[in-house]
Image 1: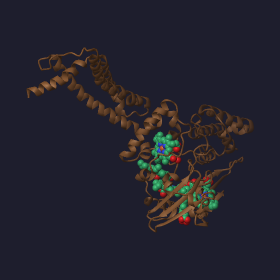
Image 2 (image 1 turned 120 degrees about the vertical axis):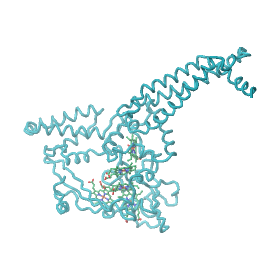
Image 3 (image 1 turned 45 degrees about the vertical axis):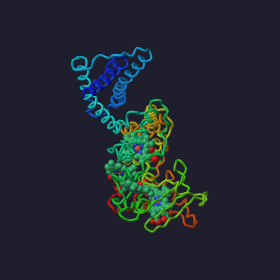
Image 4 (image 1 turned 45 degrees about the horizontal axis):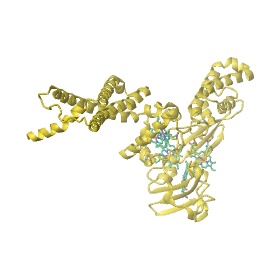
Length: 482
Ligand code: HEC
Ligand code: HEC
Ligand code: HEC
Ligand code: HEC
Ligand code: HEC
């Protein structure tokens, strides 16, 4: 018994002795500083950093570095001093006695006990809140504001504005969490050293398969059968003539294979495809229906079916069509149609569509410069060409200018080299290839006459195209709505 206690004392006495060195002391100071800073920042931490991204960076990147750095320095100092004294032959034969009679030992044990308890509590708090903070929308969207500005701005305007970034970008479970935290470290590095690509490239190649994330909230069995889509369009003439396109989208779903969702994400369906890295040119598609066991290969004109290895393909999921569920970048014309239909840009102003479009699509070095030139340009147009309108509709013109600047700021980010059409939208076929990357483009390998269907009514009933007063809207009592 006595021997054992001696052994323990003999073992620890040198550490007590060697711990009086400047490296270890610096470590103690750093760990204490970290703890005190943490205590001072506690009110901000508890409030959750709303709108204070830099306090977040300080607390969750600087504080743990100081705190844990200090904790590491203490043993490093002990080891260094021990080695040095060994080398110089100064290693003492005897250490001061270690027992309760020695007040220094009592003091040290008390100190170690208290700091350990404090360190455990503070350390676990730092880690826990750090992990939570790096999951927050503030961290993802605002901390590195230039880099994430395009995604953050478009996210705030999307139907997912209240869905945290991590719900789609990480999703449930531990394995993707760890993968994203690791790649996140590299992204922080790229931002700090300014080596990130502009624009941020899409598609996101390491995005988690969407069915594991989106289906936490939406799943095909719950989708509606058909959906009426009304698309307003203002012409570039003097009265900005309004016409409407009306589609009945066969959204499909339910428990069957019907409609758009049933055909691609319905029960038992797996679609694999091969494409260029941008996923805008699709070369082959393998369509498998596990309930019938039927597999069909479709290829484009230039692909030799024998060269296709389906195992290398990407499994089609939600984001192959909904590639902009949350970061929705509009084209200038579409955004103007929408703003005019909602009265944000008054359609009563002559040629406002044509002039607005020209001002939006011009090149500007920054959003600030764009705001100045767009407003000045619109005012100048009415002052010179329509003096009467300029005199009578000053407020409408000011509203229109403000609406145009908002459209620009929501879609064009010169610093990130993001402009009209930088990010293609796959949900459609008029502005970008979208559905027609496969439909109407690929044919069955063993039966070239059979192409992936392109009949207009497969996806939607076209109820009206560019009509001033679509009959269907009158019948439904919707004629008045824009
Ligand atoms: C509703 C789901 C969803 C939410 C919420 C979401 N994202 Fe995304 N995000 C996506 C999808 C899907 C893509 C992939 C697009 C592709 O690969 O073509 C993407 C792509 C990105 C990209 C790559 C560039 C781009 O525009 O496609 C960045 C950066 C990004 N998201 C950041 C964020 C940040 C920051 C937030 C929170 C402020 C966020 N995302 C919230 C679904 C989401
Ligand atoms: C945490 C829950 C959540 C997740 C995860 C999520 N969404 Fe959503 N989604 C919502 C909510 C809430 C709305 C807005 C309510 C609405 O419009 O029905 C919405 C709206 C939508 C809409 C617009 C519906 C409409 O009416 O036009 C689409 C499309 C959509 N989500 C697709 C996706 C896709 C694709 C993903 C995966 C990349 C995804 N969502 C992930 C909750 C979620
Ligand atoms: C083949 C392309 C395609 C795929 C794959 C796809 N969607 Fe859709 N989705 C559409 C189209 C087209 C619409 C109708 C859009 C419109 O109303 O203009 C739609 C509509 C929706 C809507 C809104 C309508 C509703 O009934 O609530 C949601 C939500 C949605 N999709 C989620 C998903 C999710 C989640 C997945 C993956 C499981 C998915 N989609 C896969 C093409 C697709
Ligand atoms: C990656 C290729 C690909 C893309 C992209 C794609 N589809 Fe398909 N789609 C297919 C294939 C393959 C079939 C099955 C064709 C067959 O069985 O003959 C199919 C079938 C369908 C069907 C059922 C057709 C029928 O005969 O009942 C609908 C509806 C449909 N797609 C709508 C869409 C819409 C809408 C989009 C765009 C939002 C889209 N698809 C994008 C490959 C694709
Ligand atoms: C593979 C499915 C598919 C096929 C085939 C298809 N469409 Fe579409 N179409 C879509 C989708 C998806 C949209 C986008 C709906 C939305 O914007 O909500 C769309 C949108 C449109 C629009 C509105 C575009 C706009 O923004 O003004 C028109 C017009 C249209 N389609 C006409 C046609 C005609 C004509 C055909 C036959 C040659 C056809 N489509 C075939 C899926 C399809």
